[in-house]
Image (tube, rainbow, N blue to C red; front, side):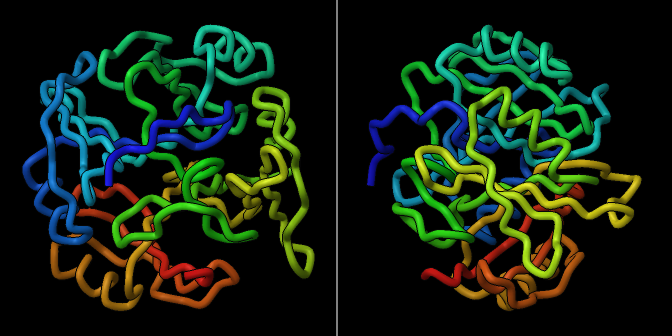
Length: 274
């Protein structure tokens, strides 16, 4: 299967990437957990090395090696598609967000920028050039409210969720920047919003109030499809990662929240729609 020749709708999650301190250990972990193969490609500055995880011939994620002096917390970054990175960066600033890096041409990822919303959650924007990326929203794969089209192969990123203090407040920002339709989908008073493009769900905003940890703060979470959530959680621990939230049943499927050996948090899910 080759990468789909599509351009993602502006606002759709279109790529995920991770910057790490030990590229070799990280490749071993995700290769063993998800079956990814890795292709080394020219990376954006200041990364000393950059690889793409490949699954069944499709590039699904990027992992870059940080310089030794850059001792930063590790986290998966969700990228949202745009047709004009410079204009979107200006809109982000005008709506109360911050642009920390770029926009800049990376060669491998097109024109990108790293930004944060008014609550401090970091995300990327990506204006594709030769490559279109693998997304988890419109035109690719979805999990959660509404079944999307596309592959749900083990190891594929299938959903992105923003965990924040108050969903409604930050939802105004994302609607203003990307033009989402925002739907309240929380049950029993839960503060949950679903972002939609052309009527299709592409991401979730989850307000957790005082339950938001001080260490991570507001953040985007990447969900990866697995064949068996319980088995995947056990495998994470065997490979040197940690299980934060044990496997549990949700409306989206059976989910566990885990970390890799470097501390980057992500979720594994056996989708209910599978």
